[in-house]
Length: 256
Image (cartoon, rainbow, N blue to C red; front, side):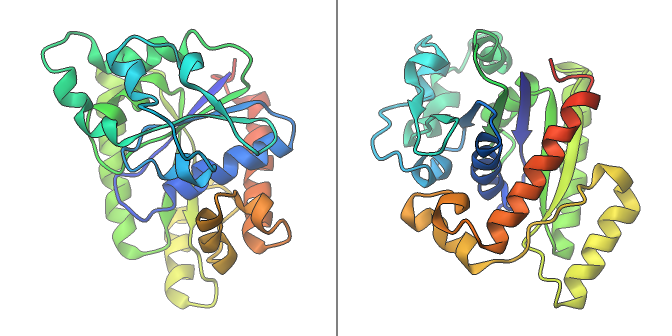
């Protein structure tokens, strides 16, 4: 079971877009996927068509519920969701003073069976929920917007990753860096992608996520892009990414 945290401390990076649509593309290719929504905004939960999630993953952190007990099916083949809710805003306060809160999610995921992938959609901030995700994950998938300011955010994230490796999760690795919202018609986007590949080499996925109107429309209809417009460039891009992620299964030392 591969546990992928999709994270970037900068908002607008394509984090939730990638979590939802990669999950759908992996499900389409025959993998069993659980998407765990850790963002109090619950965007991934809503995107997958869930309208009433109750308290969702909050109860796993605060009331000792299992992930299975709060997991819901989605309309996407092979994809389940552990939903988020606005209750997550208060999770740090609810757990204040308790010991071992950084490993709550890791322990809960350790009880899971029957999934090939667990995808963690992290909030765009460095708090208890993100630390739990980085502690539970075996790999990071980092979406980066094709914009110069996004590179500074990436540097901060990599610093955070190193601290987590040192203190909580020494085997944490980078699955890949994904260039998102790329408009190949602009020189700026081309330059940013070139800088990413020059600095990080093979850690940057060959697939990119192009700027796409249909992809931006899909969440309003509660559908992954593969459902909303299967023939769009957004669907093609996430299918290409899923193919690369699956190819990593054979070589990843942490896919077990």
